[in-house]
Length: 177
Image 1 (tube, rainbow, N blue to C red):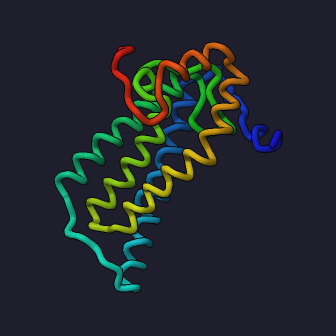
Image 2: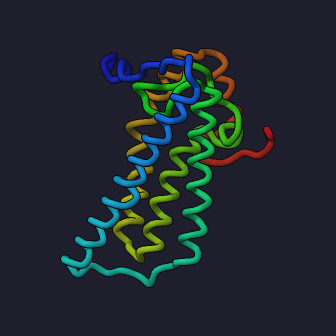
């Protein structure tokens, strides 16, 4: 178990602009792989296996995609600038980030990524892509969130515990704005 937590390493905090650039590159790679390549593969397999699909919800899908993309970009910026790190565990923030979207929800980047995945499924009319995004939510909640929270508590102690009590993981709270 200790080895699992050893993946969390803080970023070099001296250069906020470099952290922003790394976050932008990570985000771009995430979007290419998880929001383009994998959904395209899922749609291809749905066609080959003659699986059911639905009529695309283009307007709703694109509106949601733009909203969740904005949330993800704003969250990445906040993490890089105020946290002085990146979203990746091996280059994580040096400061506890409770500004911006983190005042409303504890992991807005996960919410953004899952929302983007569901949005892509709506745009493509793909049940498989929507299910893939929902499975991503479950996997994140079960396998990523627990060690991340242990690391945050280890590094930030009482400040993180208080934040965790005030701000929920999945349900936005606007009372602290």
